[in-house]
Amino acid sequence: MTVRCYLGLGSNQADPQGQLSQALDRLAGTPGLRNLRCSRFYGSKAVGPGEQADYVNAVASVDTLLSPLALLDTLQQIENLHGRVRDVRWGPRTLDLDLLLYGEQTINTARLVVPHPRLAQRAFVLVPLAELAPDLTLPDGTCLSGLLDYASAEDLWLLQ
Image (cartoon, one colour):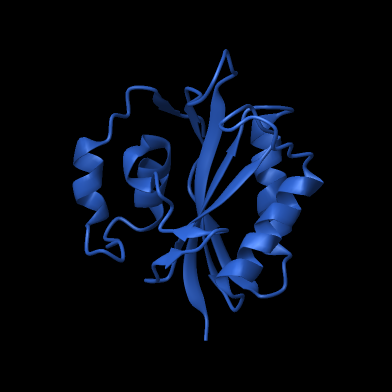
């Protein structure tokens, strides 16, 4: 049985738009994933320590046969192929792939928390997510449209 998932994509190093495009190509070619769709790309101010370049962000939806942890492993493998280094929390990155939602499941393990714990606070996730699923309801019953009412999109701009 397939599960609809939503993935957050972000990059602020080494041709960020190219990083996202290449990651989408890799996802499209991954066994166990199908029906990949992606929002438009958005620019956003970096959230994290120090001076950082602006980010390019998007959200993708995909239907999967993979378990949540197998999907997480796949996302991390793709990040590694793009030279992802995990030395500073919320630091600059070549590629960041987050599992935002895995169907209607709530997951809370040492390796994975779904829905993504900061999903509701980040316009750079909410706005592109709403492009793909404007009527989405989160596993806790929260409507995406209600979260958008409170999201500050001041530091968010459309790139394409």
